Length: 273
Image 1 (tube, one colour):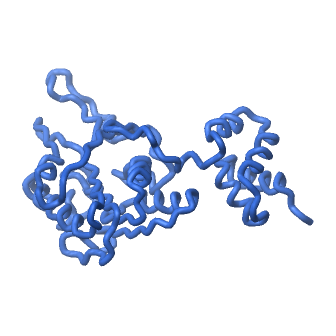
Image 2 (cartoon, one colour; image 1 turned 120 degrees about the horizontal axis):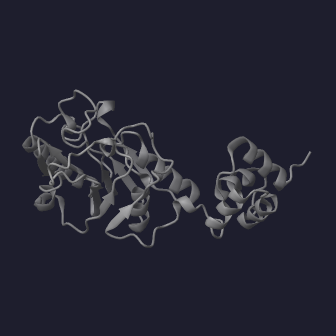
């Protein structure tokens, strides 16, 4: 019995939820090669007996998978309340994949290296771009929990368009007992030394003109404020500073912390760089 496009859509929605048009289109196209996306959109519109599905269809514009559209309005302040579907959400310190996606598309990166891949956010973002934008970005990832560290480990031989470096922050979340784990540094000086050495090694795997994107926050300890990015800004061995983006933080453990009004300097930290 030949399956109609409407039947295929119904089966896919029943098994996976309404999802996004591009995902449904890919499923339908496996059985009906060449079917245009606007046909899938039209059938979905006919079938949408509930307002929620219709709202999703309208939000997706002409039907392209909106999650992977390029952010033409990217500027020096970004806020992503929804962390997106990428990576393990339970992995503490896992960043939002939206910023990764926005940078990859803005700089038209065709190769990305993640030396601290943690919960797999960057890997998932690249995989999604390749699938839904029909791209072919090369991805490589490493992690300390797999027995590799930046300072002593062998770097990839390939040169990359972008290195995404989201290191553990000093003395905030302890990920392991490994002495090469930046979260285990005993002092700020030790952290800054290892952070800069890591950034220098990572800059060596960039192609000429490549982008080293570093995501870092700040820290308070014993009433003192520590801007963890400060020494990177003046390091002459990692290229020229091209931009700083202020990223608003959402859903952090520190959001639950109570700050006494007795100390007016204890202003909650809600940003990263």
